[in-house]
Length: 350
Image (cartoon, rainbow, N blue to C red; front, side):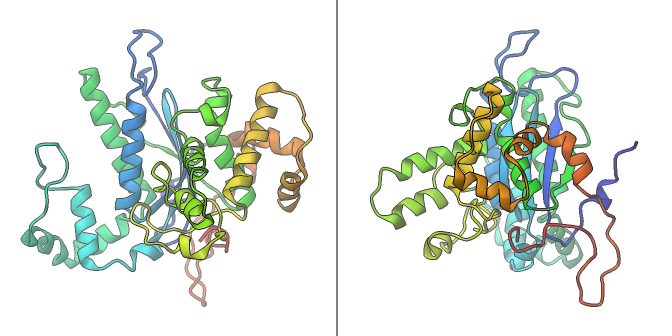
């Protein structure tokens, strides 16, 4: 069965959450030690993470979760056209310059644009409209990510040609249960691949970044200071916060400089998410069924899932989600202005 056209899955102008995966070709290694040549490419993991953090601040796309594996990348992304629509023309021009600069500095990064260069982007209204749309496009996010990764990897490998698959896999996450399972599947990728024994020892995953900030929060005494380190931490402050309803509204409302916004995406807090991740990891690694704590069981009950099904669902997420996730083609807007495309526009995802 042919894969669905991406234009039928990704709806421009709508808030959507997608699970995106892209893999290496020609038996190349993205990170870690190459099985044939023995060359170590482990240093690329941090470069990919830095690129993700840069794109999270430059585009209207929020990174909910990610993991960098030996030959592929997982990203859970949420498009925010509603945020991009509120950016001024100057902001759009400046962000586009940072992504596609005409001039670069000696370090290879975008040079400081002149007023004339910003005006040249801003005054072309037709192109500016297209660029504003692209700033909230998941396809363009993946393009900016994969092009840079492929370029740097080919440079280090001293070769040319395609490094990553030309077409990344995109899967819409249609409700909270699917989103939570996908997030845990992505965060547990190194554990499932036996590259790590626990989530806290998994390098370059969103869970690891959040755990580092949570541990740093234990160093301070006041609740506001702890929440600030968790919500806007050095390691995970560029990721979308987990809890949809924050424990302290004032901390959450602090200006977002690194992500597109400070909006959460789940009806559980970071502590519950990490505890559920740790419990699920134990079930997958040991293969033994351990009784689930009551407060975690209540989460699964709300999602209408048994603990046994939950573990199997996370372990085989991509297999199960083919039958649970629905792909629908965008249709004409209804009279109330809402599209009939199935997307994550419910309260716990906006």
